[in-house]
Amino acid sequence: MQDTKLPIYWKHALVVAGIITIMPATTAAQTVTETGDDTMAEHPYVGMWVTKDGQIRHELLPNNRYDEARGERESAYQGRYRVTDNYIEYWDDTGFTADGEFIDDVLYHGGMVLYRQE
Image (cartoon, rainbow, N blue to C red; front, side, top):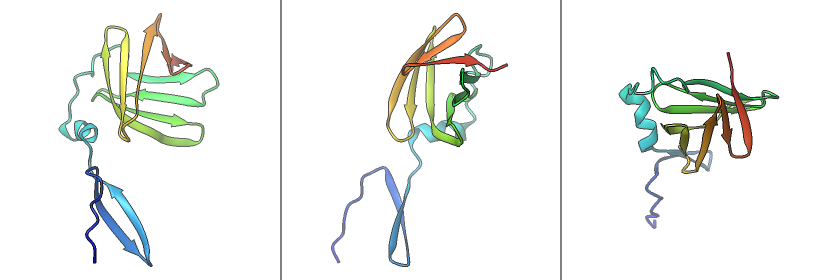
């Protein structure tokens, strides 16, 4: 049997009824949650940010993680974030990166406008 090398970010594979299911390994971004890092706990941008129609919801968590929901799909994207002044950078757990800017308590991100949910 030939030993096939999987990408470094894949750690486990499960074979059930001939179907291979690959489960990702824990990424560096995911380990932030496990450390209990709460460096953003008192930051004014922590909380829920929502588009006007409510379809896109970004929850900026106090442990430098975010959880994005889209429509009925909860936790559609998750990852870590960093805020510098009014600039935010996102690193999705899948490797996608994005950024945005807070202006007058409104988040502009990827062509979307998100408002703080009270």
